[in-house]
Length: 254
Picture 1 (cartoon, rainbow, N blue to C red):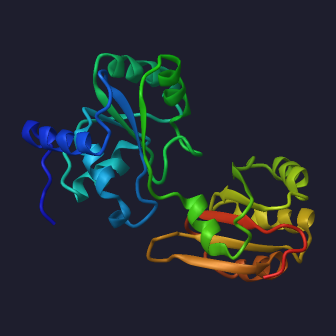
Picture 2 (picture 1 turned 135 degrees about the vertical axis):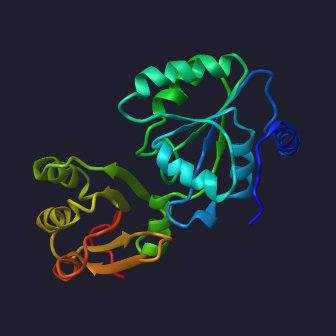
């Protein structure tokens, strides 16, 4: 793969390319919300690459993770940390830079920023100041898992990460157990077995679900079936990885 160098000449070329695609619409700076791969780095879109190169600064959930992505594509742009711990302070600082005419890119470690990842406060700050926000769509674990799950896709509810304690999870499950579409849930590898036990208690053993693990990565796996069956078989398998849980509605038959 040839190296892409984000020097001044390359930035001018990319800016002209983005102009022709309709992104250079503003007289001030703007915020790029750039989706990044959820596992396979080659899933980064051409427009996402161009947008990263055109940035004056990239705000990252974890600069070490983003550094690997940038290095893979030979992109050389300064980065800064933008995470949950400093989001309140950095949102104002980055919005100030956009007001001064800079192009700021926002990325998470994987997927679309601001969706169960840092980003909401910066987007809100830009909206408060009437600063442009440009979405650069791409990979998203929730939608990807739902699409391949076999559960209904015409209506779904994204719940993101649920409370870490059983009581909080059960309260959420009780609230949405009669929802007529699919439920989409993110869960940590450390809690997925406990979450399945709570699901069985609230939804019953026969509710159909899909457990998506390590999507687009080497060990990508999809477990589909009744909660009781998957709970038992899952206990015998490795709990490593990142998980998306898709819960079908009551009475849904695969």
